[in-house]
Image 1 (cartoon, helix red, strand yellow):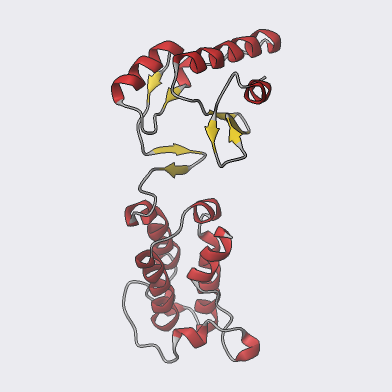
Image 2 (cartoon, one colour):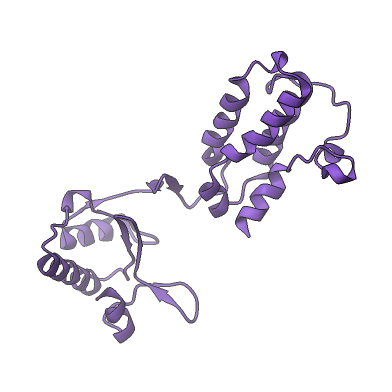
Length: 212
């Protein structure tokens, strides 16, 4: 029903580019509805939801609905929320475990990943591990990077340098937080085994690949 309304012009939705508009996105039991900021469009969406509820015998939990505005004044947002009978939300919000914010390039947004790296490496007694054991940990800890998060947001250079520093310190000294003298340039260490390196995938390359 939403797609048909978008096709016939009853709903404007969100303009992605010159050729495409979208008015909803769904994953499992989570649904995001995109609407043009007008009472007419919001009322139509309410009608669609009501029809869906009647034909499916499923009840929509209105207490879980929240309205977020982009380039919409707070006063207008509150009036729109009254139309559809829900609360007004504010950014940043979390959707499917991912923080959504306009300032997605902030270092602070990556703090959970930074802390995760610290925990994964500091949780092991690095000095008690052989060099091969530390090498395995350095390679494996990159798999702990939340893939969906890294595929959505470009990591600031400061974050990449910090994460790479944790791995470098752990490999050479067994402690991710203490700077150690590197016996071999990190660039050489990160080259494939076939060319004389240790086959460690750089953090920057991993995140760049996820973005692609």
